[in-house]
Length: 590
Image (cartoon, rainbow, N blue to C red; front, side):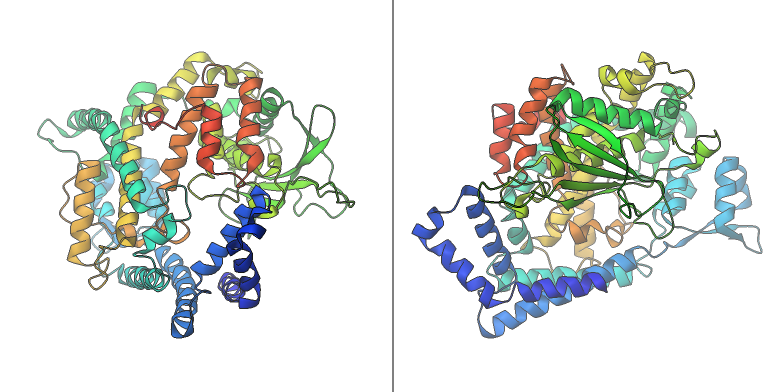
């Protein structure tokens, strides 16, 4: 309710003519507008567009309609998130099927299920049990039942809300003069129009198609080894399980001990090495001021230039506790900015917080309560969020509206995605990934196995993201059948078509994944942004860092051409300045 109230208040401000009128006059006055700095022009245009996306330039009934739709959209977005988190349907696992389960899997399912009178185990599926069954249950019938555990009856409420949300967004876009919600949203992104997005996704589909077929054949051969040679087809519910099996075939338990090399202190040392090597920045842990800390296990890091000048502060809030935000995230607390020459007051210090919820249980068992061991996925999360934090802390703009990550949504994930590449680089890992007992560097063969595991089924994972992105564009586009809605035969046919074109699966029925896809809310018509940013980060890595990941020259260029600008420059200009050419999707697809 707080979020809805705040959003409605912002909508009210954005409908205030006393604020909009002078801004619009300034932008439309060529002489006055040309007297502004480039950043002031960019912010003025951005704010004017933001006002107009809320309908302030409209008159009479159209203006009232736009404001009413904005408020209803906020309510529907909140309702969809609530409904999407409801448990899935139930599945029953017979006594015979239970005997085929891994003992640990069976124990976990029993802890979340109940036995029926006929001995069947009735399991109410949630996110955990759903993933557990698809990834760790050999029996294909059990996996299939879990995959299709949502019925049209069980998802009527979220799909009903999604239908109204899609219709309301479409009505708003038409009221504002756009042909569709996708056209409206992409108009203020890097892509500029839905056609650019679809072209990018189709180009990526064609580039990875062959590799995805190779990967699926590997899984099919593994399926035949387990289920018999009569198994001639691979299904979506097979993929998680057989990826796990192929990984075990290749690496056995060789990656099980990775965590021993990634204590949290070692990982923070890795962040220090990156800052020193790439930017000449010192990253030092310092004490909190009185009353500054909001929990007992926080860390406060100070960033300083080589000459000792203070850059900013970074808070690390890494472990779970009651009522804490449950996802990993970066929060910008105070913006970094250029101090105007006429400004006599003290410049505020750039400040950010990095929030995670790392699993401390494996560390407590080893007596490491103050030095948690991370698995490699958690290492990626730490470096990913640190990439966002660097963007906030190192940007230096005139205006806070453009500071750090306050830029185009389909670009701002790029610095975070780039940081993930460092967590797979052998040269870099061997500098900080040390065994928590012996101090030995991570073995070369372990890093090799880590990279092989990462790369082995990349194309399949990207195909999944393309499917999500294409459906997101379709339901936001001008051709979507709003009368029939997302639970209609037409939408099911659309999903089947996208599954077949972009993943190669011909499935007759839907598992209604879109009823739980909350990215439709914050990333409505923008889900492609994840793949966009991955493509940009891949090109930067392979062009500028792969041969020398700790290059000061490349690091300084990255700081000067991308991090320093926040959202104050066009991302295309920043990328071309960094790369020395146009961006190439091939760096990512290869």
